[in-house]
Length: 315
Ligand SMILES: *[C@@H]1O[C@H](CO)[C@@H](O)[C@H](O)[C@H]1NC(C)=O
Image 1 (cartoon, rainbow, N blue to C red):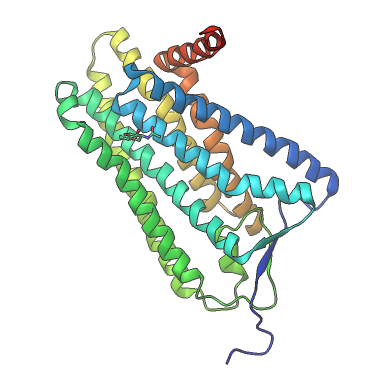
Image 2: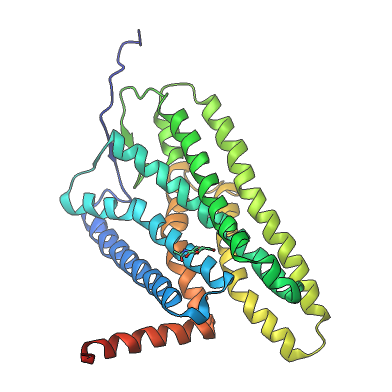
């Protein structure tokens, strides 16, 4: 039925970030460090928010959701990569590979949509403060967190169903550190026209919709801030949104930088740099940017740490 050298592939070989043993040690230490930092800080944020009823407002619930998505995002790729370096094995089973691809798509999309939802939340808070509680009522908030989950799973499922149709011939070597969609599409010997078309159409809408929401929200926020006459009011509004805007710029700056100005880098390196930024650097930096700049968050974290200190002495 199929031609000559086609075999059923039961595993893929992940070449990782570096071929050299010395560099691999550096990668291991560096990524282990980034992984631990990301898990601890996001975990602390979720804990601090859920234990402090003062922070049970839409903004912080979205932030907790973002932290959860960040922890999950980094966990799809980094632990397996570290494991492979540690055991000096480069293989990943076909099933694990597909699963890894599925969840890496899910969490990057959720991250993206949550940034849009959070921008919208700030827009309502700043431009319609009197209607904030009516617009951001619990049912709407729940909907705004559920929609990204549903959408991202639909997108990931679409890509997965299309991918498992593809035939992998003689090569199963991925020049990447986890099973990302783009390198998998490059590896197959089937025609990937449909996959690429779907990737382009869905990818574009998944990026455009949250970005449009963010742009809309911030244009209104900026014009509202400029209308505030007191300097103090201006600074308060700017500091509320500044941290969020930083993350957004980081996220979309990455997309533009990596995918729209690809000229100087090798395509494989470009995939790797993009993947590192999305699945490792963004999840690690998100909480830094929020908690370091947010007074309430700092207070909640301090409370959490003090509480821990006092726990053992309690009867
Ligand atoms: C995510 O948001 C929803 C509602 O907006 C909230 O009920 C839920 O607790 C949040 N999830 C986390 C992990 O905090």
